[in-house]
Image (cartoon, rainbow over all chains, first blue to last red; front, side, top):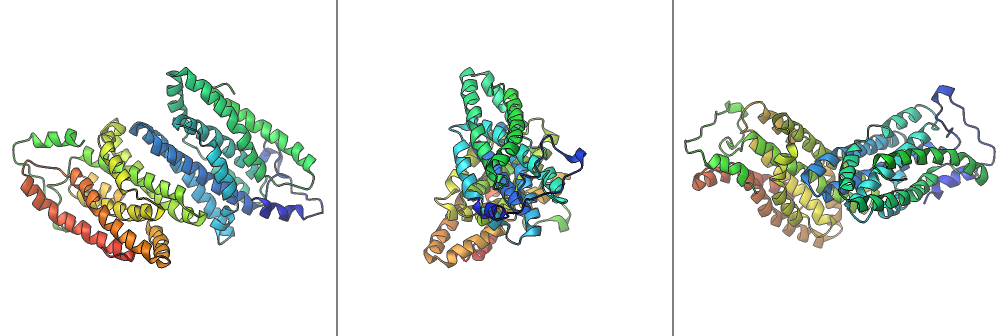
Length: 238
Length: 238
Protein backbone atom coordinates (compact mmCIF):
# COMPACT_ATOMS: atom_id res chain seq x y z
CA UNK A 1 0.00 0.00 0.00
CA UNK A 2 2.90 2.28 0.74
CA UNK A 3 4.81 1.48 -2.40
CA UNK A 4 3.43 4.48 -4.25
CA UNK A 5 5.39 6.79 -2.04
CA UNK A 6 8.33 4.53 -1.36
CA UNK A 7 9.13 3.82 -4.96
CA UNK A 8 9.88 7.45 -5.59
CA UNK A 9 12.57 7.44 -2.92
CA UNK A 10 14.06 4.09 -3.83
CA UNK A 11 14.63 5.17 -7.43
CA UNK A 12 17.07 7.87 -6.42
CA UNK A 13 20.54 6.45 -6.65
CA UNK A 14 22.63 9.39 -5.52
CA UNK A 15 23.26 9.62 -1.76
CA UNK A 16 20.63 11.77 -0.07
CA UNK A 17 21.75 14.38 2.34
CA UNK A 18 19.25 16.40 4.28
CA UNK A 19 20.15 19.62 6.06
CA UNK A 20 20.96 19.00 9.69
CA UNK A 21 19.03 21.01 12.24
CA UNK A 22 20.41 23.22 14.97
CA UNK A 23 21.43 21.05 17.97
CA UNK A 24 18.71 22.43 20.23
CA UNK A 25 16.00 21.36 17.73
CA UNK A 26 17.28 17.78 17.67
CA UNK A 27 15.18 15.08 19.30
CA UNK A 28 17.01 12.36 21.24
CA UNK A 29 17.21 10.47 17.97
CA UNK A 30 17.84 12.14 14.65
CA UNK A 31 14.97 11.30 12.37
CA UNK A 32 15.87 13.48 9.41
CA UNK A 33 17.01 10.50 7.35
CA UNK A 34 13.92 8.48 8.25
CA UNK A 35 11.26 11.10 7.65
CA UNK A 36 9.22 10.69 4.45
CA UNK A 37 8.34 13.52 2.12
CA UNK A 38 5.79 15.99 3.43
CA UNK A 39 2.75 14.69 1.48
CA UNK A 40 3.00 11.05 2.59
CA UNK A 41 3.81 12.23 6.12
CA UNK A 42 0.69 14.41 6.27
CA UNK A 43 -1.52 11.86 4.49
CA UNK A 44 -0.60 9.07 6.85
CA UNK A 45 -0.65 11.22 10.00
CA UNK A 46 -4.06 12.66 9.04
CA UNK A 47 -5.59 9.27 8.33
CA UNK A 48 -4.21 7.85 11.57
CA UNK A 49 -5.82 10.69 13.54
CA UNK A 50 -9.11 9.94 11.75
CA UNK A 51 -8.73 6.28 12.76
CA UNK A 52 -8.01 7.32 16.37
CA UNK A 53 -11.10 9.53 16.25
CA UNK A 54 -13.20 6.62 15.01
CA UNK A 55 -11.94 4.26 17.69
CA UNK A 56 -12.63 6.79 20.47
CA UNK A 57 -16.08 7.56 19.02
CA UNK A 58 -16.77 3.83 19.02
CA UNK A 59 -15.73 3.62 22.68
CA UNK A 60 -18.08 6.53 23.43
CA UNK A 61 -20.93 4.60 21.77
CA UNK A 62 -20.12 1.42 23.68
CA UNK A 63 -19.76 3.19 27.05
CA UNK A 64 -21.90 1.55 29.72
CA UNK A 65 -22.72 4.89 31.38
CA UNK A 66 -23.41 8.48 30.38
CA UNK A 67 -20.59 9.47 32.74
CA UNK A 68 -18.11 7.37 30.76
CA UNK A 69 -19.38 8.75 27.44
CA UNK A 70 -18.96 12.23 28.84
CA UNK A 71 -15.41 11.49 30.03
CA UNK A 72 -14.33 10.05 26.66
CA UNK A 73 -16.00 12.46 24.25
CA UNK A 74 -13.40 15.28 24.52
CA UNK A 75 -10.63 12.88 23.43
CA UNK A 76 -12.62 12.13 20.26
CA UNK A 77 -12.84 15.86 19.64
CA UNK A 78 -9.08 16.29 19.98
CA UNK A 79 -8.28 13.49 17.52
CA UNK A 80 -10.80 14.92 15.04
CA UNK A 81 -9.27 18.36 15.47
CA UNK A 82 -5.77 17.01 14.78
CA UNK A 83 -7.14 15.24 11.69
CA UNK A 84 -8.83 18.40 10.40
CA UNK A 85 -5.68 20.50 10.94
CA UNK A 86 -3.45 17.96 9.17
CA UNK A 87 -5.92 17.82 6.27
CA UNK A 88 -5.79 21.62 6.07
CA UNK A 89 -1.98 21.37 5.74
CA UNK A 90 -2.44 18.71 3.07
CA UNK A 91 -4.93 20.88 1.18
CA UNK A 92 -2.40 23.73 0.99
CA UNK A 93 -0.07 21.38 -0.86
CA UNK A 94 -2.45 19.15 -2.82
CA UNK A 95 -5.97 19.77 -4.06
CA UNK A 96 -7.14 16.24 -3.23
CA UNK A 97 -6.30 15.39 0.41
CA UNK A 98 -8.62 12.36 0.38
CA UNK A 99 -6.58 10.81 -2.46
CA UNK A 100 -3.34 11.31 -0.53
CA UNK A 101 -4.87 9.69 2.57
CA UNK A 102 -6.55 6.88 0.63
CA UNK A 103 -3.16 5.30 -0.15
CA UNK A 104 -2.72 4.57 3.56
CA UNK A 105 -6.31 3.67 4.40
CA UNK A 106 -6.34 -0.09 3.70
CA UNK A 107 -3.29 -0.86 5.87
CA UNK A 108 -4.48 1.37 8.72
CA UNK A 109 -8.03 0.01 8.55
CA UNK A 110 -6.63 -3.53 8.81
CA UNK A 111 -4.44 -2.46 11.72
CA UNK A 112 -7.42 -0.84 13.50
CA UNK A 113 -9.43 -4.04 13.12
CA UNK A 114 -6.59 -6.01 14.75
CA UNK A 115 -6.12 -3.67 17.73
CA UNK A 116 -9.84 -3.02 18.31
CA UNK A 117 -10.04 -5.54 21.17
CA UNK A 118 -12.79 -7.92 22.14
CA UNK A 119 -14.55 -5.72 24.68
CA UNK A 120 -14.85 -2.13 25.84
CA UNK A 121 -11.89 -2.34 28.26
CA UNK A 122 -9.56 -3.77 25.63
CA UNK A 123 -10.71 -1.03 23.25
CA UNK A 124 -9.98 1.63 25.85
CA UNK A 125 -6.53 0.19 26.61
CA UNK A 126 -5.85 -0.02 22.89
CA UNK A 127 -6.81 3.60 22.27
CA UNK A 128 -4.68 4.84 25.14
CA UNK A 129 -1.65 2.75 24.28
CA UNK A 130 -1.65 2.69 20.46
CA UNK A 131 -2.65 6.33 19.98
CA UNK A 132 0.08 7.12 22.53
CA UNK A 133 2.73 5.33 20.47
CA UNK A 134 1.50 6.74 17.17
CA UNK A 135 1.32 10.32 18.44
CA UNK A 136 4.84 10.01 19.89
CA UNK A 137 6.09 8.56 16.62
CA UNK A 138 4.58 11.20 14.34
CA UNK A 139 5.83 13.98 16.62
CA UNK A 140 9.35 12.49 16.39
CA UNK A 141 9.04 12.01 12.64
CA UNK A 142 7.91 15.62 12.16
CA UNK A 143 11.28 16.86 13.41
CA UNK A 144 12.76 15.48 10.22
CA UNK A 145 10.44 17.40 7.88
CA UNK A 146 12.09 20.25 6.02
CA UNK A 147 10.77 23.78 6.38
CA UNK A 148 8.16 25.30 8.67
CA UNK A 149 5.81 22.32 8.34
CA UNK A 150 8.05 20.30 10.69
CA UNK A 151 7.41 22.32 13.87
CA UNK A 152 3.80 22.95 12.83
CA UNK A 153 2.97 19.26 12.26
CA UNK A 154 4.74 18.40 15.49
CA UNK A 155 2.62 20.94 17.37
CA UNK A 156 -0.62 19.65 15.81
CA UNK A 157 0.03 16.00 16.66
CA UNK A 158 1.47 16.83 20.10
CA UNK A 159 -1.66 18.71 21.29
CA UNK A 160 -3.10 17.59 24.64
CA UNK A 161 -4.87 14.33 23.90
CA UNK A 162 -7.46 14.38 26.73
CA UNK A 163 -7.00 10.63 26.96
CA UNK A 164 -6.28 10.75 30.70
CA UNK A 165 -9.96 9.96 31.23
CA UNK A 166 -9.14 6.47 29.92
CA UNK A 167 -6.55 5.96 32.67
CA UNK A 168 -9.17 6.81 35.30
CA UNK A 169 -11.78 4.48 33.76
CA UNK A 170 -9.28 1.60 33.46
CA UNK A 171 -7.76 2.08 36.92
CA UNK A 172 -11.25 1.93 38.43
CA UNK A 173 -12.13 -1.22 36.51
CA UNK A 174 -8.80 -2.97 37.20
CA UNK A 175 -9.06 -2.03 40.88
CA UNK A 176 -12.25 -4.01 41.22
CA UNK A 177 -11.25 -6.94 38.98
CA UNK A 178 -7.68 -8.25 39.18
CA UNK A 179 -8.17 -10.70 36.30
CA UNK A 180 -8.96 -7.74 34.04
CA UNK A 181 -5.53 -6.36 34.96
CA UNK A 182 -3.69 -9.48 33.80
CA UNK A 183 -5.78 -9.70 30.64
CA UNK A 184 -5.06 -6.06 29.76
CA UNK A 185 -1.35 -6.45 30.56
CA UNK A 186 -1.14 -9.22 27.93
CA UNK A 187 -3.23 -7.17 25.52
CA UNK A 188 -1.07 -4.08 26.03
CA UNK A 189 2.09 -6.04 25.22
CA UNK A 190 0.47 -7.55 22.11
CA UNK A 191 -0.44 -4.11 20.73
CA UNK A 192 3.17 -2.93 20.50
CA UNK A 193 4.24 -5.17 17.63
CA UNK A 194 1.38 -4.24 15.33
CA UNK A 195 1.73 -0.57 16.14
CA UNK A 196 5.47 -0.53 15.47
CA UNK A 197 4.73 -2.15 12.10
CA UNK A 198 2.54 0.85 11.25
CA UNK A 199 5.35 3.15 12.34
CA UNK A 200 7.87 1.17 10.30
CA UNK A 201 5.69 1.48 7.20
CA UNK A 202 5.65 5.28 7.57
CA UNK A 203 9.43 5.58 7.54
CA UNK A 204 11.37 6.70 4.50
CA UNK A 205 13.21 3.59 3.33
CA UNK A 206 16.47 3.90 1.47
CA UNK A 207 18.01 1.11 -0.56
CA UNK A 208 20.23 0.21 2.38
CA UNK A 209 18.01 -1.88 4.62
CA UNK A 210 20.74 -2.39 7.22
CA UNK A 211 21.41 1.34 7.69
CA UNK A 212 17.65 1.88 7.89
CA UNK A 213 17.39 -0.66 10.70
CA UNK A 214 20.25 0.96 12.58
CA UNK A 215 18.49 4.31 12.37
CA UNK A 216 15.07 2.92 13.27
CA UNK A 217 16.26 1.03 16.34
CA UNK A 218 16.82 3.98 18.71
CA UNK A 219 13.47 5.45 17.65
CA UNK A 220 11.67 2.26 18.55
CA UNK A 221 13.59 2.02 21.82
CA UNK A 222 12.32 5.47 22.75
CA UNK A 223 8.74 4.65 21.68
CA UNK A 224 8.78 1.45 23.75
CA UNK A 225 10.15 3.28 26.81
CA UNK A 226 7.26 5.74 26.64
CA UNK A 227 4.81 2.89 26.08
CA UNK A 228 6.12 1.18 29.22
CA UNK A 229 5.47 4.35 31.23
CA UNK A 230 1.87 4.38 29.94
CA UNK A 231 1.50 0.71 30.91
CA UNK A 232 2.81 1.62 34.39
CA UNK A 233 0.24 4.41 34.61
CA UNK A 234 -2.47 1.83 33.98
CA UNK A 235 -0.97 -0.38 36.70
CA UNK A 236 0.01 -2.97 34.08
CA UNK A 237 3.35 -4.74 33.77
CA UNK A 238 4.88 -3.91 30.40
CA UNK B 1 -38.08 8.27 31.91
CA UNK B 2 -39.02 11.92 31.89
CA UNK B 3 -41.19 11.75 34.96
CA UNK B 4 -38.46 13.01 37.26
CA UNK B 5 -38.64 16.40 35.68
CA UNK B 6 -42.29 16.40 34.76
CA UNK B 7 -43.57 15.55 38.19
CA UNK B 8 -42.19 18.76 39.61
CA UNK B 9 -44.23 20.80 37.16
CA UNK B 10 -47.41 18.75 37.43
CA UNK B 11 -47.53 19.18 41.20
CA UNK B 12 -47.90 22.93 40.93
CA UNK B 13 -51.61 23.74 41.06
CA UNK B 14 -51.55 27.49 40.61
CA UNK B 15 -51.68 28.74 37.01
CA UNK B 16 -48.17 29.30 35.66
CA UNK B 17 -47.48 32.49 33.85
CA UNK B 18 -44.15 33.09 32.19
CA UNK B 19 -42.95 36.49 31.17
CA UNK B 20 -43.72 37.21 27.53
CA UNK B 21 -40.84 38.25 25.36
CA UNK B 22 -40.49 41.35 23.23
CA UNK B 23 -42.39 40.88 19.92
CA UNK B 24 -39.23 40.86 17.80
CA UNK B 25 -37.80 37.94 19.83
CA UNK B 26 -40.89 35.80 19.29
CA UNK B 27 -40.63 32.80 17.02
CA UNK B 28 -43.52 32.04 14.69
CA UNK B 29 -45.02 30.01 17.52
CA UNK B 30 -44.80 31.02 21.15
CA UNK B 31 -43.09 28.25 23.04
CA UNK B 32 -42.81 29.90 26.43
CA UNK B 33 -45.56 27.74 27.91
CA UNK B 34 -44.10 24.56 26.42
CA UNK B 35 -40.47 25.03 27.38
CA UNK B 36 -39.24 22.89 30.28
CA UNK B 37 -37.05 24.19 33.10
CA UNK B 38 -33.48 25.00 32.18
CA UNK B 39 -31.84 21.83 33.60
CA UNK B 40 -34.03 19.30 31.80
CA UNK B 41 -33.80 21.43 28.65
CA UNK B 42 -29.99 21.44 28.75
CA UNK B 43 -29.75 17.80 29.82
CA UNK B 44 -31.91 16.56 27.00
CA UNK B 45 -30.45 18.90 24.36
CA UNK B 46 -26.89 17.94 25.39
CA UNK B 47 -27.60 14.21 25.29
CA UNK B 48 -29.31 14.53 21.91
CA UNK B 49 -26.26 16.30 20.47
CA UNK B 50 -24.09 13.47 21.86
CA UNK B 51 -26.40 10.97 20.14
CA UNK B 52 -26.19 12.95 16.87
CA UNK B 53 -22.39 12.96 17.25
CA UNK B 54 -22.40 9.18 17.73
CA UNK B 55 -24.58 8.56 14.71
CA UNK B 56 -22.42 10.76 12.46
CA UNK B 57 -19.24 9.14 13.82
CA UNK B 58 -20.78 5.76 13.01
CA UNK B 59 -21.50 6.95 9.46
CA UNK B 60 -17.87 8.10 9.18
CA UNK B 61 -16.74 4.61 10.22
CA UNK B 62 -19.07 2.92 7.73
CA UNK B 63 -18.16 5.22 4.85
CA UNK B 64 -17.14 3.26 1.76
CA UNK B 65 -14.47 5.80 0.77
CA UNK B 66 -11.95 8.09 2.44
CA UNK B 67 -13.55 10.96 0.52
CA UNK B 68 -16.92 10.26 2.19
CA UNK B 69 -15.29 9.98 5.63
CA UNK B 70 -13.59 13.29 5.00
CA UNK B 71 -16.86 14.92 3.92
CA UNK B 72 -18.79 13.69 6.98
CA UNK B 73 -16.20 14.19 9.72
CA UNK B 74 -16.75 17.96 10.20
CA UNK B 75 -20.45 17.37 10.96
CA UNK B 76 -19.43 14.99 13.76
CA UNK B 77 -17.18 17.72 15.12
CA UNK B 78 -20.02 20.27 15.11
CA UNK B 79 -22.41 17.97 17.00
CA UNK B 80 -19.70 17.19 19.55
CA UNK B 81 -18.99 20.88 19.94
CA UNK B 82 -22.67 21.62 20.56
CA UNK B 83 -22.74 18.82 23.13
CA UNK B 84 -19.64 20.12 24.93
CA UNK B 85 -21.03 23.68 25.04
CA UNK B 86 -24.40 22.55 26.38
CA UNK B 87 -22.64 20.45 29.02
CA UNK B 88 -20.62 23.52 30.00
CA UNK B 89 -23.91 25.39 30.53
CA UNK B 90 -25.21 22.45 32.55
CA UNK B 91 -22.06 22.40 34.69
CA UNK B 92 -22.56 26.06 35.62
CA UNK B 93 -25.92 25.11 37.10
CA UNK B 94 -25.34 21.59 38.40
CA UNK B 95 -22.16 19.86 39.51
CA UNK B 96 -23.14 16.55 37.89
CA UNK B 97 -24.06 17.08 34.23
CA UNK B 98 -23.88 13.34 33.49
CA UNK B 99 -26.61 12.66 36.07
CA UNK B 100 -28.88 15.29 34.50
CA UNK B 101 -28.34 13.76 31.04
CA UNK B 102 -28.65 10.16 32.26
CA UNK B 103 -32.38 10.66 32.90
CA UNK B 104 -32.91 11.11 29.17
CA UNK B 105 -30.41 8.53 27.93
CA UNK B 106 -32.56 5.35 27.83
CA UNK B 107 -35.36 6.91 25.75
CA UNK B 108 -32.94 8.60 23.35
CA UNK B 109 -30.80 5.48 23.01
CA UNK B 110 -33.93 3.49 22.11
CA UNK B 111 -34.93 6.18 19.62
CA UNK B 112 -31.45 6.17 18.03
CA UNK B 113 -31.63 2.39 17.61
CA UNK B 114 -34.97 2.76 15.80
CA UNK B 115 -33.84 5.51 13.41
CA UNK B 116 -30.38 4.04 12.73
CA UNK B 117 -31.44 2.51 9.42
CA UNK B 118 -30.46 -0.76 7.80
CA UNK B 119 -27.59 0.53 5.66
CA UNK B 120 -25.26 3.48 5.26
CA UNK B 121 -27.64 5.47 3.03
CA UNK B 122 -30.55 5.10 5.45
CA UNK B 123 -28.22 6.16 8.27
CA UNK B 124 -27.15 9.24 6.31
CA UNK B 125 -30.75 10.18 5.51
CA UNK B 126 -31.68 9.63 9.13
CA UNK B 127 -28.88 11.87 10.43
CA UNK B 128 -29.74 14.65 8.01
CA UNK B 129 -33.49 14.50 8.61
CA UNK B 130 -33.76 13.67 12.32
CA UNK B 131 -30.92 15.92 13.47
CA UNK B 132 -32.55 18.61 11.33
CA UNK B 133 -35.89 18.25 13.14
CA UNK B 134 -34.29 18.00 16.58
CA UNK B 135 -32.03 21.03 16.06
CA UNK B 136 -35.01 23.06 14.80
CA UNK B 137 -37.06 21.94 17.77
CA UNK B 138 -34.49 22.73 20.46
CA UNK B 139 -33.81 26.12 18.87
CA UNK B 140 -37.55 26.87 19.03
CA UNK B 141 -37.81 25.53 22.55
CA UNK B 142 -34.87 27.68 23.71
CA UNK B 143 -36.85 30.83 22.94
CA UNK B 144 -39.07 29.92 25.90
CA UNK B 145 -36.22 29.66 28.41
CA UNK B 146 -36.08 32.48 30.91
CA UNK B 147 -32.99 34.66 31.20
CA UNK B 148 -29.85 34.87 29.10
CA UNK B 149 -29.61 31.09 28.66
CA UNK B 150 -32.45 31.23 26.10
CA UNK B 151 -30.59 33.11 23.37
CA UNK B 152 -27.34 31.37 24.29
CA UNK B 153 -28.77 27.84 24.04
CA UNK B 154 -30.51 28.81 20.81
CA UNK B 155 -27.21 30.04 19.38
CA UNK B 156 -25.36 26.87 20.43
CA UNK B 157 -27.90 24.49 18.88
CA UNK B 158 -28.39 26.67 15.78
CA UNK B 159 -24.68 26.66 14.82
CA UNK B 160 -23.91 25.65 11.23
CA UNK B 161 -24.33 21.88 11.17
CA UNK B 162 -22.00 21.04 8.24
CA UNK B 163 -24.49 18.35 7.26
CA UNK B 164 -24.76 19.63 3.68
CA UNK B 165 -22.15 17.03 2.77
CA UNK B 166 -24.87 14.44 3.38
CA UNK B 167 -27.11 16.05 0.76
CA UNK B 168 -24.31 15.79 -1.81
CA UNK B 169 -23.57 12.14 -0.94
CA UNK B 170 -27.25 11.17 -1.09
CA UNK B 171 -28.01 13.13 -4.26
CA UNK B 172 -25.12 11.34 -5.99
CA UNK B 173 -26.30 7.94 -4.83
CA UNK B 174 -29.98 8.55 -5.66
CA UNK B 175 -28.99 9.92 -9.07
CA UNK B 176 -27.43 6.60 -10.00
CA UNK B 177 -30.06 4.35 -8.35
CA UNK B 178 -33.73 5.35 -8.61
CA UNK B 179 -34.91 2.54 -6.33
CA UNK B 180 -32.73 3.98 -3.55
CA UNK B 181 -34.72 7.22 -3.93
CA UNK B 182 -38.06 5.53 -3.34
CA UNK B 183 -36.69 3.52 -0.43
CA UNK B 184 -35.27 6.66 1.21
CA UNK B 185 -38.51 8.59 0.60
CA UNK B 186 -40.41 5.97 2.61
CA UNK B 187 -37.69 5.92 5.26
CA UNK B 188 -37.69 9.71 5.52
CA UNK B 189 -41.46 9.76 6.11
CA UNK B 190 -41.16 7.02 8.73
CA UNK B 191 -38.59 8.97 10.73
CA UNK B 192 -40.89 11.89 11.43
CA UNK B 193 -43.23 10.12 13.84
CA UNK B 194 -40.50 8.77 16.10
CA UNK B 195 -38.66 12.08 16.08
CA UNK B 196 -41.76 14.08 16.99
CA UNK B 197 -42.28 11.68 19.90
CA UNK B 198 -38.86 12.66 21.20
CA UNK B 199 -39.80 16.31 20.79
CA UNK B 200 -43.12 15.72 22.55
CA UNK B 201 -41.36 14.10 25.50
CA UNK B 202 -39.15 17.19 25.91
CA UNK B 203 -42.09 19.55 26.23
CA UNK B 204 -43.24 20.92 29.56
CA UNK B 205 -46.59 19.23 30.17
CA UNK B 206 -49.22 20.94 32.25
CA UNK B 207 -52.17 19.11 33.76
CA UNK B 208 -54.32 20.28 30.84
CA UNK B 209 -53.54 17.82 28.08
CA UNK B 210 -55.88 19.50 25.62
CA UNK B 211 -54.32 22.94 25.97
CA UNK B 212 -50.89 21.30 25.64
CA UNK B 213 -51.94 19.70 22.36
CA UNK B 214 -53.26 23.00 21.03
CA UNK B 215 -49.95 24.63 21.83
CA UNK B 216 -47.87 21.79 20.43
CA UNK B 217 -49.70 21.59 17.13
CA UNK B 218 -48.34 24.76 15.44
CA UNK B 219 -44.81 23.84 16.58
CA UNK B 220 -45.07 20.44 14.94
CA UNK B 221 -46.58 22.00 11.81
CA UNK B 222 -43.53 24.22 11.55
CA UNK B 223 -41.12 21.34 12.19
CA UNK B 224 -42.82 19.23 9.51
CA UNK B 225 -42.72 22.10 7.00
CA UNK B 226 -38.97 22.41 7.48
CA UNK B 227 -38.60 18.62 7.29
CA UNK B 228 -40.44 18.64 3.94
CA UNK B 229 -38.00 21.21 2.61
CA UNK B 230 -35.10 18.96 3.63
CA UNK B 231 -36.81 16.01 1.90
CA UNK B 232 -37.14 18.18 -1.22
CA UNK B 233 -33.43 19.03 -1.01
CA UNK B 234 -32.69 15.30 -1.11
CA UNK B 235 -35.00 14.93 -4.13
CA UNK B 236 -37.42 12.87 -2.04
CA UNK B 237 -41.21 13.27 -1.89
CA UNK B 238 -42.24 14.10 1.67
